[in-house]
Length: 137
Length: 480
Picture 1 (cartoon, each protein chain N blue to C red):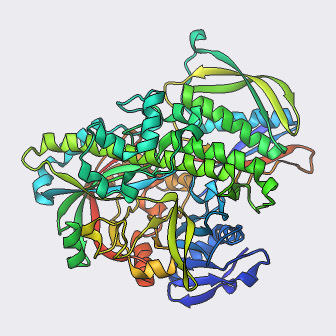
Picture 2: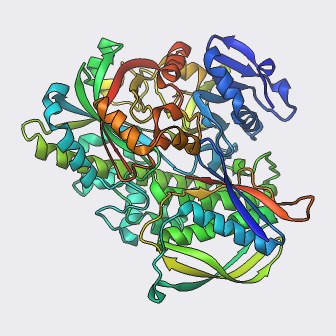
Picture 3: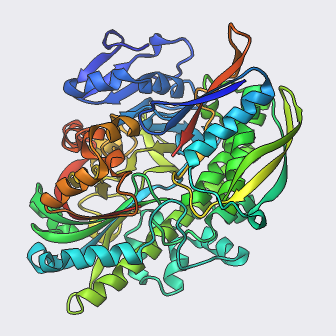
């Protein structure tokens, strides 16, 4: 199970994400970021790429932000939207996966950065992982 | 949650949260606002963030916030903090992701009546010539060597390459280049994000505007600034684009990882910081300076683009001289009085503008007696202001003042109030030509989504930290 929702924020974009595992949380976060970036992907095989991503951080909250930051950087440089293809390893300090990228002609939102603001990955009463993530736009 | 009861009113426009409010505060927190605006300030977490800033190692005198305050990341927007040099901390959260986001004002020799017949044409030509919008690239595509030169030399480089005149540099903060820039501490990713973005506005609240001066508050200083009633001017509001955003992201991450090795713990990850005189601190400062130079170069390139349009449309009055160019997201090493002596400080301004007083040695001769011009853009369709720096600002706020109107409503809520097409019609009816790449996104920047700029400027004027000189009214707005 995974879930994301855009929440109100005075100046930027706030995302709430939830997953029944850390893997699902990371997938939901990536899907949420892509929904903010917007833009229509080119559906041709010629524009699809695979890229590996590997991130290590001091704790799980920093890890998920650093992961999204790395994907955002690649998206902005290459003008690609990346989705999760396969997660190799995911724990509280290390994440490794293969991403699938599709070219976009233009993004709809100018996301400057993924911030650490309000981010705090916790397990809620239902046992699901959840956090809020704020994007500077 | 901070409430009115926690504030001590020092004057009609100055409030203090004393150090006794929280045991880890090293200095008090000061808020410049009016009684009428206070309620909105207390509605979000900006004052909690200001109290957090007051805990930073090496902070001097007070953590401050301007009347356009709203909640940010780490620092509140509108925040000013000065830390001891060189051992005090430097914090990317005290500068922001858009390093050297700032404003430049160009003065024409034309009056509104001269330009009125050409407004629609001028709007379209500016929109076509100056790239704006999400991810939109510019004419120049910089290779690695070229981008490093721009990061070293800022606006100076653009002038050398023919995109301006030498005189332009006199009227830019820090003469358009920060000396400590080092492109070697700017990541390849940052350079890749910025390599095609010189000469571009970007999106969001960035804009290019043509304004007419509709009120003069100080005739003498306005004359020294070369401003007169009904004169047409151009405002440019943009920053370091993707390059600056990436520099901030990169170094925020580094600092979060190493901060504890300096014995530093902060209440908010976005306040991550290290001593300036650490290797990571110097690396960030040099990278920040490089990104700031990119922003100065960006506004210089846009100036060139606007001048091309202007000279083509108004060949008998082609002149567009710079009044001034200010940064409102930056850290500078400056000397200020603390207690009874002068100290060298790392002044962080995040959504706040430097406002040097009369007599400051950095100012060009023509502004030595007036104080530095300060450019305060209002929200889309509303007024903007030209202010001047004052001795009062030097004494009270580290020569700092506000930067704009400050948001009071989310983008989502703003879009629910009015549709883009309707807002466009309203602005056209009000005599403002709008060219935008996103009509549906226009309501996000509507006037009602921001604080009242008149109230914001009134506070800084009453507080004596900047002085009203002229008010501008938009006639053309170009947005991404």
